[in-house]
Length: 268
Image (cartoon, rainbow, N blue to C red; front, side, top):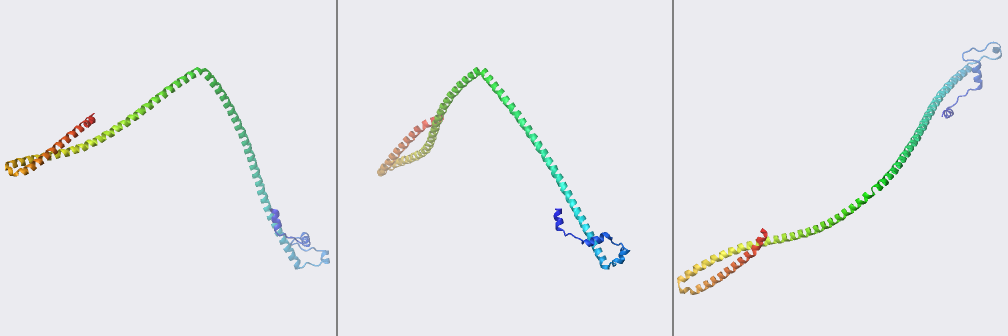
């Protein structure tokens, strides 16, 4: 990066004559005396200006070179620090890899030990199972026999329970039918009771009518024979009322007889 900056920055170059003059005669020193004064003419004011400009340019070049050098040193230090950091990171990564490798080996060893212990335990369990099976073979057979007998009894009990449930279901259906019949009988009894009450009221009314007709008939008999035709009509009405009353009584008797067994059935 510093080399690229050097290439980009403009370089200041002095002429060879200016460098020779600057080296042989420092700034501010008097001109040489002796034979040179007789051989060469004295310098003019233009040569001193060139020397001053050359000196300024040299100083600028030296300052710029020093600045570039300091930048180069800073970059070198940063590069060195970066390299050190990279070396530290590489060492840490190497140490981490070693730790991972050691952990992997340790885990692998632990897994192998666990597997060996598991295999040993399974072997011991197989041995114990075989030994216990040989020792308890007779007990196992006896338990199997008892178990089969218990299963057979359980199946029989299950069959009996199924039959009982079937009978219970049938009984429930019969009871439901009887309840339905009883409900219909109650409805019929209630209807018959209502009808019976109506018939009894009607019989009472007929009896009242019959009494009125008899009373009127007696009155007509007392009135004389001129009312014979009316008496005949009244007799006919009386006979019809008596017949209707008899029919109503018979119907009431029949309904009471039909209602009596139903009432007994409800009490039972």
